[in-house]
Image 1: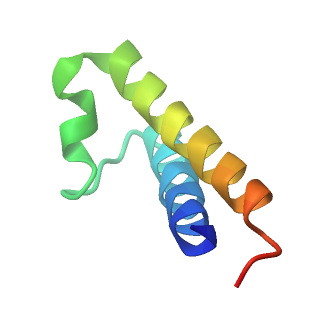
Image 2: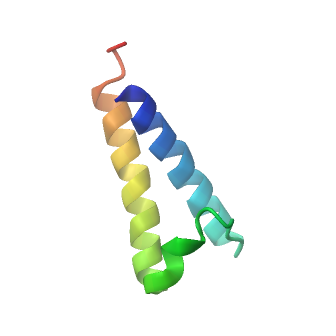
Length: 61
């Protein structure tokens, strides 16, 4: 779970940074299909969920 949390955190942060730069990768282009505000919600939600999972499971191997 720690790896999944870290992966979501990194992908979420990358998506937020790329979103501010008005750049979307092909992998994350689906996020804005439902509108810009929903896309930002998905970005922030993925980042928060990844941070939470990493924080909760950081001491488990």
